[in-house]
Image 1 (cartoon, one colour):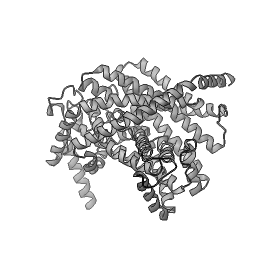
Image 2 (cartoon, one colour):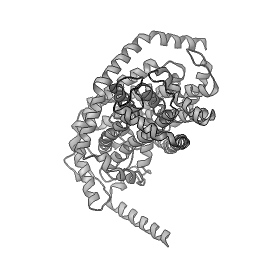
Image 3 (cartoon, rainbow, N blue to C red):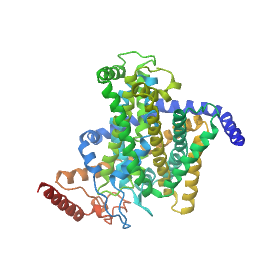
Image 4 (cartoon, one colour):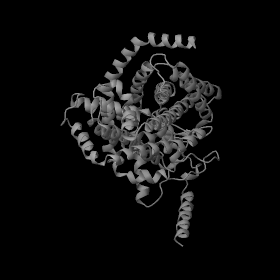
Length: 516
């Protein structure tokens, strides 16, 4: 244990200077370029698609319920919903609890409005990138596989660009962010058990929790995408519903305060009410930045999960993943916002108290038991993010090689980082991830913009079939001008018209049976 303590102290002391430098670079990059780039690209896609994220809300829910068919390999396919839960597992993390509280602390209630705005704009980017992930997916050994690296290589004939993206996402998500999530689990558990974690205190507690999280993660991670998706299919809905119920309890108990809270949000959004946090620029910046980091729209993460789904048409995963942005921000983040704002005693401008603000607010409203409930919620959120973030790394490692040994080595390294997150100070890692995330965004947005002509062709193909009253299906021969679409060769039964004709007959028979 002494050796471990010495090692942790050495790491923290030797990286203190680097943390400051990286933080400054990351803050500058996000505040002066990345935030605006994400917004402008999202607006551009919104205009090009005639507001696809607004006019197709019904289609988002409809496609989410699509059945799972049989894939090219004879296995039952990963459904649209299961792929949705893998991406939601990564999106819905501690940022939805701590990140929202931080945005309000630093930007005031108005930051919540700008989180909603950025989700509405970002949903268009999520649609485009996830459509491309589906369009250029390929047949892997166990399931379909795809993502930005694949559409860079197959759509732009730029494998070198795909390799750059792989480096960014593997380091950021599969290594750094999994460590951050474990750290959040340790912090939440320590709060419930009253363990002091300042400095290197509570190292035995850290090690025990770290080993437990690492062991459970390994059991799931070494099972591959089918095990991962089967876990997230259950875990994500359960944790989201439980947390939403908590938020609704707070809202119902404080119905009289809700109009005032909404008034503060809209007043603060446009600078009509001053807060200790300062100017309108700070309000907008905090809301947009935290919103973007939470819903991940345009970052190139969700397409990795979306590409695993077996669907009849590439546009369907675009709709599903756009819905994921709304799910993350409009539901989960908004619940946190209302919990905090109803509480009211917000330490504006004090970043240090943001981490425990949501717990404090819940405790004040529902009693001490809610602190322990939130500990469980944070643990579930963080654990689901570990699984989702890992898979982003796996799908990109497979872009480089399908050999088993490199994949096994990668999985072991991920588990090491899962454990490392429990024992180390993560200031450097968190800020490094922020910076690397920026590089990932630049590479992905460049590819999405260049491939927008393909996005529009596929979307028009989908909408033409819907207008004709048909369930949209797609095969590569439908748009022969788009090359390198080997996954859309008709071997997946969901892409064949006879499958949907039979499905419609079965659904009609079921309805008739219920009516009689």
